[in-house]
Length: 159
Image 1: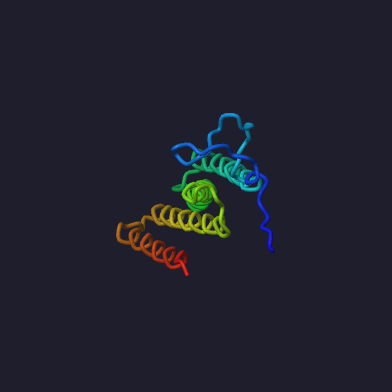
Image 2: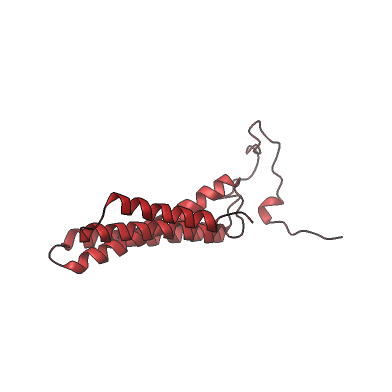
């Protein structure tokens, strides 16, 4: 006979289910977050905090440096904006998937969230660099986005 390990929050009595399929919260002790692990919560908060710091750096670079006077300012700004967007999107993408999976975190969800957010950050950074250099055109931007969509679709295919 094999026994499965059950998380602490799953072993508690939930009470009767309501019409929505979720347990009735009346009479149950209030918990901070019944379904999200502490490490996931801390990771989300840490990523949002890191994103806030990078967004402050973006504001500093954008308001104090001119890319026409200092050519490296455009590249620094592009990298910082790409990093800020990536750090902002990682927890948002993970939380979206977490919600869609009925609040269950599956193995690989964080990796997929990081990969998808990195794609967006890289594309944004490259588009900003192309814009600063005066090389950005609509067909180039659409081609880059199509490449990312195909690559992510290939990597995310269910096996």
